[in-house]
Length: 322
Image (cartoon, rainbow, N blue to C red):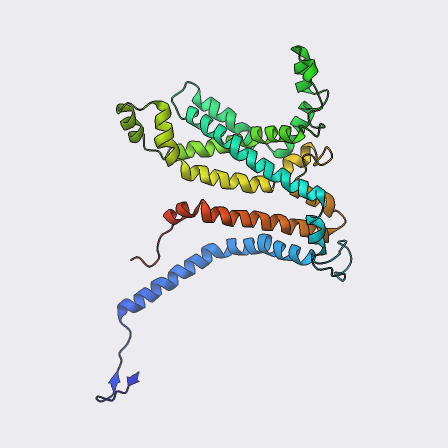
C-alpha cells in the first residue's frame, strides 16, 4: 500500500508485523473454540427456552382453543383476566408465602444442620446420607407417599390414635386452614437435603486455621460460627436463597401430586393454576405462563443486582488484562 504525504515522497507500508498476525490468529482460534463449545448449548437453549417463551407470548394474545387457526386476536385481555382473577391472586400469594417461609425456616434449619454435620461426629456419613435421601426421591413418589400418610386413615392419624392423641387427628391435606402449612412441611422434608449439601460444600471453603486461631484467642464455638463461619458462608447462602426463591415461584409437581391445588385453592400455585385453567384454553394458559416468567425474571434480575452482584464480580475476569 502506498501513502502519499505532503512533506516528501510516497511511503510504502510493509506487511503487518508477525506479532500482530499471531495475535489475530490466536483471537480467531479462541472465538472458533468458543463457538464450537457454546454453539450446541446455545442452540438447545434457544430451541427449548427462548422459542417457547416467544410462542407463549404470541399465543397469549389470541382467544385460542388449541385446535383451530389463530384468528381471534384479543390483545392483552387474557392478562387482564388473569390478574383480575381472585383465584390467581391467591395463587401468587401462596407462592410468595412459600418463598418467605423458605427464607425464614428452611435456610436457618439447613445452616444449623450443616454446622452440626461439619463437626467430627460418630456416624456423620450416615446422618448426611439420611438427610440427602429425600431429595433424590422422585417428586411423584414423595407426593403419593405423603398423600397416603396424611389421609384421614393414614399413618399420622393412626399414630396419634395409638398414643392417645386421637383428638388431634384430622384430614391434614383437606383442611383449608392448615393445608398450605402442611404442604410447606412436605417441601421442607423433600428439599432440605439439597440445602444442607450446599451449605456443607460451602463450609469446606472456610479455612480451619481461622477457627483454630479464634479458639486459641478464647472465642466460643458460637462466636466462631457467628463471626467467622457465617460471614464466609455468605456467598453459598445467597446462591441457595436464589435457587430457593426461583424454585418456590415455579413450584408445581409436589403440589399437583398431593393436592392439585386444593382444598378450595388453599395450596394453589401459579403453575398449578396455569395447568388447571389452561386446559382447553391455551391462549389463557400462555398468558399465565408469561406472567409467571416475567415475575421470576424480574425477581432474578433484582436479586442478582442487589445480592449477587459482589459475588459475580469476584468471579469475573477482565478480558483486557494481559
